[in-house]
Image: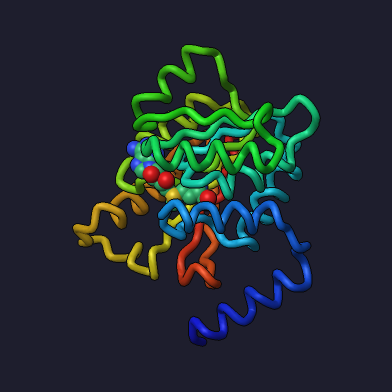
Length: 221
Ligand code: SAM
């Protein structure tokens, strides 16, 4: 199979299962105009996050790694009335673009963007009593996955769903000698979640318009 096939199948999935969405198209267009890298989740992955938030019955969502809030908007749209999402972003420029996108999506009252290195802003979030969260999406700088998972568990309750993205990395995750910090961060996510007795987890390899990667799906027991 080639990337061309993966793209064609992703297009087929979108054409059949994902409605035209001028708001999300506008988000991607603004991201491009503002020079943000196109490393948001794909439409099919965004819809998956939306469905998972719904299936979890989540009312409070935490995201680590906002970019332009494409995934945030997908998740926030799944929240019931009164639901809230908090998303953490290091780059002030990404956060500014995200806020504009969130306003365009009519979700300014639902989503809060906190700016700063997530390992610096997470303690404040906890101190503010923002947790426990029902659904946590980890999608920031991969070398810090261990710290993010630690915080995700602190901010969880039994039943919290945790998704950790980009952990397959073209299959290089199996290279135990890798010195790539992103690969080491991916492997750490498997090791930490795999050995924690409070957590049940699996991982899915994915192909599509974003290439060959995958995510860990976990529930805190
Ligand atoms: N979740 C987004 C989506 O699918 O639309 C994509 C997020 S992108 C893969 C990763 C984001 O994490 C970037 O915007 C990057 O600036 C941000 N980031 C990198 N290091 C970070 C840190 N230490 N704390 C918080 N965010 C960070």
